[in-house]
Structure formats: C-alpha cells, structure tokens
Length: 212
Image 1: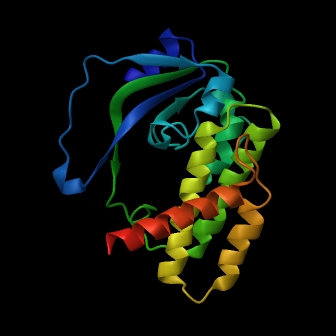
Image 2: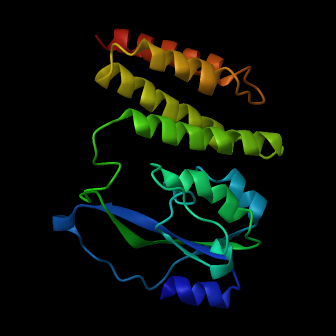
C-alpha cells in the first residue's frame, strides 16, 4: 500500500523500499508509520546501483509502472536474473523513489534462495556476466564507476574463494576469472581490475599470515 500510494503521489516510474533479511521462525513485523524518501533520476540510480545492500538491483522490493515490462522480460534459467534486467528497467525510468524503511521481509529459508543454496559454478557465470555487463555500460557511458567497481571486485573475490574451497582442482576457472572478467576491465585510477584484484589478494594473503 505504501509503495502504491508513493508511486501515485510522487508520479514516479519505480518505487524501491528497504528490506530486512529474516528467518521464518524469528519474524517480528514492525508497523511503519514514518519514513524518509529519496529521489533519483536515471543516471543517479545507475551510478548508485550497487549501494544500499543492492536494493536497487534486486527485483522483489519494488513496485513498477506497467509500461516498463511491456516488452521487457526476465531471462529464463538464469541465476541472479535481477542483474541482467535492472539496467533496462532503469533506462525506462525518469523518476525513481527510494523509501528508507524495511517494507519487504526476505526469507533466508526459502528453498530457492541463492543465499541458502550450495555454491555452484552456474552462479559464478550468471552473476559475473551480469556484473560485467553493468560495469561496461557504466564505463562506456562515462558514469561514476566507484560503486560498481568495488562491488564487482567484491563478487570476484567471493567467487575466487568459492572456487578454492569447493573446486580446488579447477585451475581453468581461475584462468577464466583472470582473463574473461578481470584483464579486459579498466577503471579511472586503476590500470585494470586484474591489477586491483591481485593487489587485494596479496593484501589478504599478508593479513592471513600476520594472523597466524
């Protein structure tokens, strides 16, 4: 109801709310009476796409104008499908409203929750392909890259550790991470994502040694 009223009152194209991660047996619903709102145009939303715990990216905490999905569809059989569609959603929006209140409760116990399921290679391919497309779009259109750059690095490190833990013999996947997702990407102030990634890995290695 709050999302619907906000969409109408503010004449927005998209309304986004905050969310709370919960376990089904520990849900305490809170009545929301007061909340702040922020307004973004298309460019501002694209540059902030990886902030606020990814709430701009995910699909389930939003109310959309029907026109946005006249011809747009989520890809079938793809994990992290939000990543593959959000750019095209935002490109159809002139006014985006963000509500700073947790109006959506995300269950961590859903059978199809990515956060719950075991790490797998399909997630690596689908997620990083989506981030790579977002990264290149923001770079090619001279938008601010800070947020997407660090989120991209963070997810690559996550998958790097996931491979080392779950697929230690798959050196070919490490090679793919290096060559397909890192070496081709550049960011102002950093020669390549590849260099930044390796500097970060060196730092993590030093911190690990110092903790022993």
